[in-house]
Image (cartoon, rainbow, N blue to C red; front, top):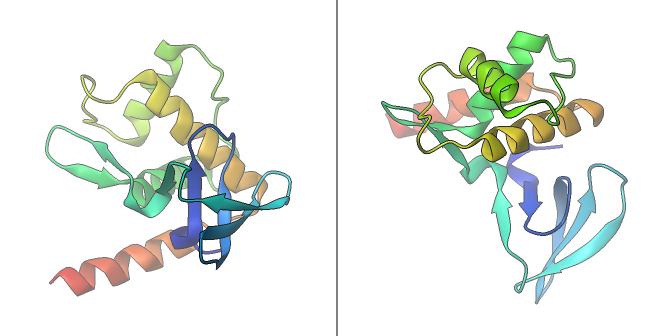
Length: 141
């Protein structure tokens, strides 16, 4: 499973892996339950690799944030996304010090932690995030 093929779909819980493309959209597989179905142009879709979290200095790619959580938790599940907002924000400040508390809401943190835990349960290889990120930064130079 490649991070670049994982999406979130507005209105649908969980994460999805893009399997193939069709004329009208894409075929995805739910990472949670393995069900396959089409996603059309009417759905709001976000590629996880295109998501970034605001800090006071820059925007940090979601892949980096997820890798930070994986490093902190040693690749195991983190706290529940159902914890109190204060607990979630305190945890997130350990994972991403200096995140912009005015633009990053508890609901955003909740989603990131939930996505991380979904990836853990799907046995995602977090070491691939380091490799993909290194390749991306070499291309920018």
